[in-house]
Length: 412
Image (cartoon, rainbow, N blue to C red):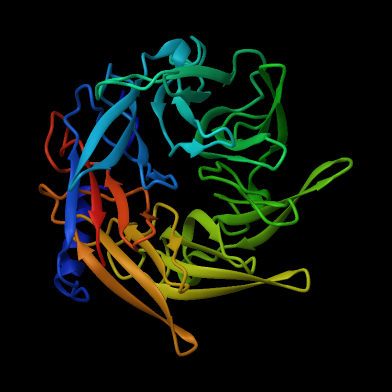
């Protein structure tokens, strides 16, 4: 059930031309941990990875398995790595096409969304689900030991305005309530912000906001996150000049109140913002997939000050039209940012490090589109030793168009 559209031939050609003049990459120290086949292990991991305290990696593949995607784990075993599919989606009731990374919940189990499935509505494909995966109650004696799925919510089955096609990761608050976005549905079919509240083993959905387009934003795609005061932040399309927005929701006694933190001006600030992260001082960081000086996006910072926000472009991403940042960044303890773009021939891993009051952009690795993968769409995660991990949605081999993708490790 492939739902994605890859970059056009024109974009790839422009990216290849720019690559010839791109900044040199450092020594190639990328290791492929798993190459997807499109079979039982899954195929096309568009989302990034989630890492736990033990360094185990979890992710989703949108296709493969029984044809509707998988959830998988990659972990160290001696001097190598082992791969195991944890769950295979069957479509319809249990979900189809897991579109975002998984979240490790307060109870240590995995939570995520599927863009489709959950019933026969939405033209027979289902409108999407929020699911929970739990490991077997007893220790597993072999690599193939499936986890147990519970559907927390199926979208569109009771109220067509509750949102459809959930995307991104889910987020928990301190009370154990779950939050996320749908990229469609709602009153004007422009997406929703929702909350799921647990009670007596069941979960109740509450739509916190219907996006209405224009300056309000539309079609949210990525994870929302909390600050220390309990405010929610995220990104969406739309905005005053259609470059996208960063939004904030503040809880009040009468409901959640939205304010726009920033509306992007495409040609100078970038457009189509990806997911955001927050540092300990409350600054927001992210990238855009398009716009900016080269048409390939920007890297930016939003800093709070006295109730207002200051927007700063940290870097104009070099590349071709529309090949910029499509996943969230990650920050290390020194304040250096890491991420990926789909620029160059097949994609780039980069770092953006603070230096003398400014920032220095360095391309760490250029993917070739062969065995090392093609299109690192999902961003990166960082382990305690400073190694980076991510996925590519294509390349590597397998029975998929342009390859089924890989899981990779990069040691800067």
